[in-house]
Image 1 (cartoon, rainbow, N blue to C red):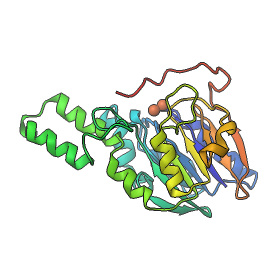
Image 2: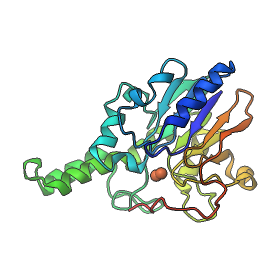
Image 3: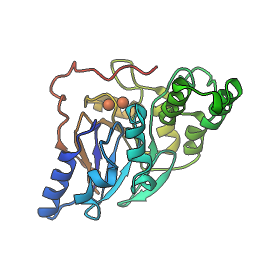
Length: 257
Ligand SMILES: [Fe+2]
Ligand SMILES: [Fe+2]
């Protein structure tokens, strides 16, 4: 059993509480996977100290995890830094789980348009060519941090050559009725042959079931601080609804720039 965790935005207490409750009932998940925008106030292993060792902990990042150095370091420099699934496929709880963190940003790549840069390294090289690091100001350093949570084509291509059962993303695939899903995310899921896709970012949990056949996989949005479980037999169970799942027009995650 794997739990998928919607955007926590700085408040992870419900995750600790629910995992400990499940453990008490003899049903702790094999692993939990954060879907981005954790926005941790302290290093992730400290946020989750009570459940480290109770369940395996994985994550992908969201756009807000690079808003400031604190959020970024609390993930990338935590003891759980190695549990970042972005651009990887890992075998977890009997499933092969692939991760694609971050968001598309138009200055880099807004598919189906051609990308401006193939990789983070190429983007950074271009930045250094325009202005070397010793001349950097707050703007350049901020851009460098921001694009650590941008989706670059090389990561998507690398994943597309692999197979997985599950794709976890911050961005959504194309089945959203608000037009804010991405065909490129759905295409990646189909290339990898996944059966399930779980995403965060939109702070809602729409019913996508009418699109499952045309999509070729089942997809679920996990709402704000929501928890959705995938059981070993493939059943889906909502452990904790997102805080705003009932308010269907709730939408304050700003569009990507
Ligand atoms: Fe978010
Ligand atoms: Fe987000």
